Amino acid sequence: MRTKEDFHKLIEKIEDEEVLKGYFKLIQRLNNNQTGELWDGLSRAEKEELLLSYDESFDPNNLVSHEEVKNQHNKWLEK
Image (cartoon, rainbow, N blue to C red; front, side):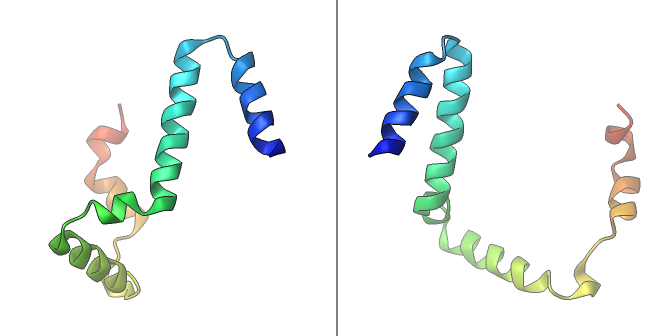
C-alpha cells in the first residue's frame, strides 16, 4: 500500500511532538466520524432530537438569521 508508506514517511519527518499529537487527534476524530462512533455514542433520545432538529431545519420559519444570531451574541463577538 503506497499510501500507508507515504503516510509513515511523512510522520517520520515531523520532529515536533505537539504537531504530531495534533495530527493524531485530527485523524482520530476523522476516523471516528467515518466509523459512526459519534452517532453510536448518542442515546436514543439524543438521536431522535438530532433527527428532529435536522428535519425542522428545512422549514425557513424555524431558522434564525445570521444578523439575529450576531445581535444575540454581540458581547462575545466584540472581544
